[in-house]
Image (cartoon, rainbow, N blue to C red; front, side):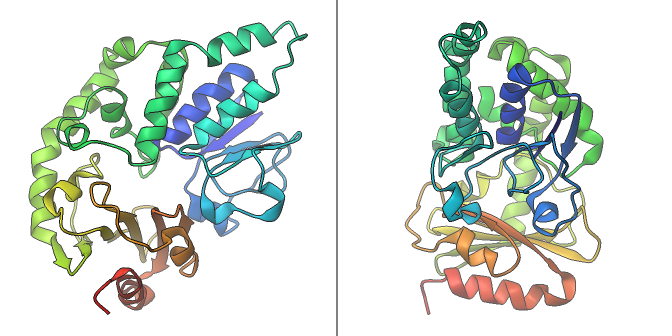
Length: 312
């Protein structure tokens, strides 16, 4: 079986759970836009997590509001996986393997013991918190544990695939302390902390507050530090929603636009995922993204900023 997932933290935790219970022999890491555009060849036997549904897959797990359809409007789809508006896709995966563990099966006790262990319960709680943006200011300014590890994972650089696979293995097999002591995880976590001040300077130079909208235009900036996507909200606490614009690193002549509530001031009423569906993207009610051709970027940015602005 092949696992098709995102290389963000939620997608990798999904991988840690699924590889515990399924015979996964290969992996494909993709971003949602490629699935939405039909650019991913999905085949029977594939397990899709944290990505849009494809009818050819064998199992599918997701939690994004823009992937809601009537046939998926219940927690578990018999024989097909699970979908619900949960804090994380990993939570949906956990529920599926819990619900489908039959007491009379020899493997059920072992499966439930793993899912109900304190280590996995804590990992799922942290994954929910991270993916739903339920962090404290201290989590953002002084990230530690799984929060810090989550900042080392993103799907933009295909060359990081060996690291993503290592993270899946560590999340599945090791304690948090052991994972933090892994040489590559430790190196990447230190890099995130070292680059925090550089990211702060870039955000201050290229971000403006337009009424309630935190507008960050990072196009044309080389080597933007990876990591702390919530740092901007500590710098512009008055704004209640961010629109961030960057060059798409995976597609030429394409602009990436992401929109998200300020996690410390979540007073916006906009359904972000629904809004960005109109621009070929999607997401959750409070966060989402889209990709548009460069020649249509300014029009899209203008429309999105207007839609989330409360000053009209």
